[in-house]
Amino acid sequence: VMPVLVCEEDNGPCGTFPPETARRDQTLAFPSFMVLGFIDVSLGSRVSPIYYSARGATVTIEMRATNVLMANDVLRITRAMGYKLMDRTLLALRVVKFKDSEHGLDIQRVWSSSFTDPDDYWAALDTDVAADTTILFSFKADLPLEAFPAPFWSIR
Image 1 (cartoon, rainbow, N blue to C red):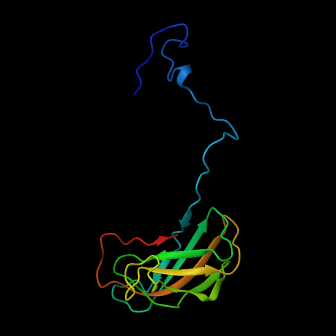
Image 2: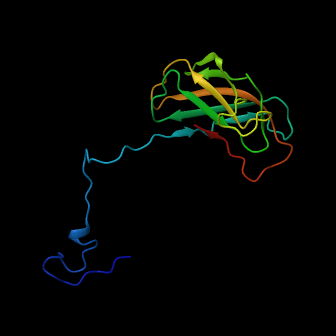
Image 3: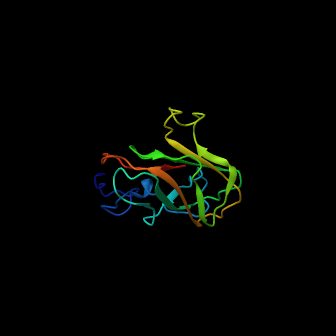
């Protein structure tokens, strides 16, 4: 917390906070670093069935990217702890289209640390997706036998 300044001629009126010398007003087109985009995963994402130890459950992801997703971009999904991803089960449901032969488990260990049980599923986009467009896709996974403390998926 900044202390209130003493009443002086060059600091403005008594008690100005912050002092005029420290103020930074907002301006348009201010030169700065580019703000990175992000992926927003909707609450509409779901797993069906929801029961532990279910085999071949359908994981449906509803997401929106703030940047344009271009053809040939790679979408990478990192599974939550305890889940086991099933190879070649990706299904495009809304707006997005994936290349038929360019998706699957990361058995080459580009991102994952194990080729027998990879953490990642990857897919190359076949067409462009405009920024701020909601897309929907699904894939299959075996659910964990018990609850894990951090059931978080990651999408890049």
